[in-house]
Length: 174
Image 1: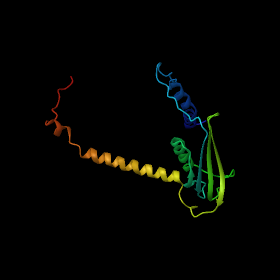
Image 2: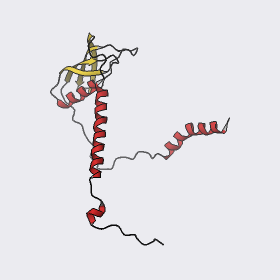
Image 3: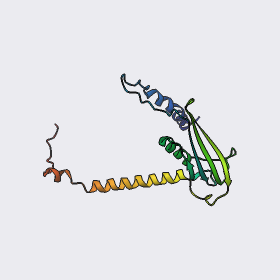
Image 4: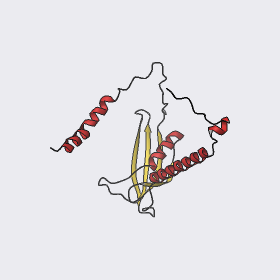
C-alpha cells in the first residue's frame, strides 16, 4: 500500500474516533432548574388545508383552509403544510390540488396527518415550492441585514474621536 493511501485511510477512519474521544459526555441539568412544561390541549383538534403541488411534489401555496380554535396548532400545521413534499412511492409527483388534514388526539397526544388528491392538473406545475421561496426570502433578508450592519459600522466614530486623544506608544515590555 502506498504511503498516501495509508494516510488517507487513517484520516477517513481514525478521525471520527479521535473526535468522539475528545467530546465530553453531556452533563445533567442543574438541580433546581425549572423544567419547561408544555400544556397540550385536552380536546381533539382538526385542521384542513387544500394545497397546490408542483411537478416536483413541492407545495406551492395553500389555496384554502379550515382551522381549529387553537392558534398555535393552526400555525404549526400551516407551516408543516407549506414545507411538504407530496410524492408517489416511486418518487414521481402529480401536479394538482391535495387535501392535507391534521387531527390531534388528546388521549395519545399524537397528530395524524393525511393527504388525499382532490384534483389533478393546474397552472402552478412549473412554479417554485413555498419552502424554497421562504428560504430565498430569508437569505435575502439576512444579506440585507448584514449590509445594514456594515453601513452602520462605517458611520460609527473612531475611538480617537470619542476620547479626544490618540493612542500613545507604550513602553517596551522588557
